[in-house]
Image (cartoon, rainbow, N blue to C red):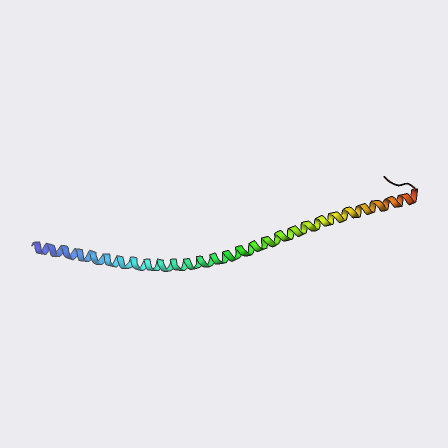
Length: 108
């Protein structure tokens, strides 16, 4: 009787063991699939990082160029302002000459 009981218990354990093996096999397949997906994502992330680095370098180069242009533009503006002052001074002198010729008086 005890032998039959042990056989029944052994049969139950075997079924559970087979079920666990099946579950383990399923988990292994899912794990492999996740590893493949992870590998793909890592490759895409690496590619994005490279492109981002290229864009950052280009952006930095553009910023430097923009800074250089701004300095040159500022220098041109200063020069333009100096020319305008000289031009205005010339007009004032010309106006004084015109008044002097017309009225015989000069402006101080």
